[in-house]
Image (cartoon, rainbow, N blue to C red; front, side, top):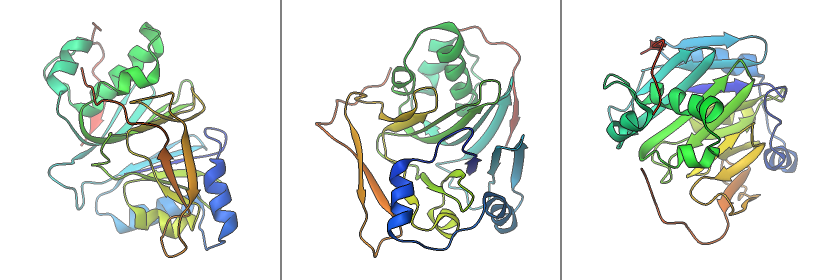
Length: 248
């Protein structure tokens, strides 16, 4: 899966900008990255949202344990990869039917966060248990919400393209060719939300996240880590209307 966002949506992280400056390396534009994804993946589905967002995914070379999906509801777009172990209890928590899958649930959880209760982002995503990574974009508010599971079972990477777009993908090789050394693994157990404005650990949101330069021989330019002691792992009604379009 691939999500590419202009600087009007997300400011390029300083740590990735610095990594690219330390070791200049070839990059390509966001448009070229999206084309490379489409050209190299069989039956890829791509969505261009205005001038600032591009989303794409494919079932090609998909792990049966980590299926990918894309859903859209009320201008909320979500790419999801993986599986939630507690999907059943989450359906009950949000008042959703048994037919609700993971990508739909993420959209509904985000809507609850946005519209119906003053829940902090870490509280919502902290209830997810399983192997997952997702990229959610709310076009109505230009909000980006990205998260990875606490054990990093589903790989997720982010980097900066030649034209300053921030790209997220589950394929490190794809981003390496586009972002050069302005590239890092998205830290496990963390989320980025433009509504919050920074990267945070959802297991312990008070713990600081720092980045250090990666060794030259590695493909990354930086490595992110959560400071402080690890938190204990924890996992735990909304009406359901207008079942969204899902592409699978």
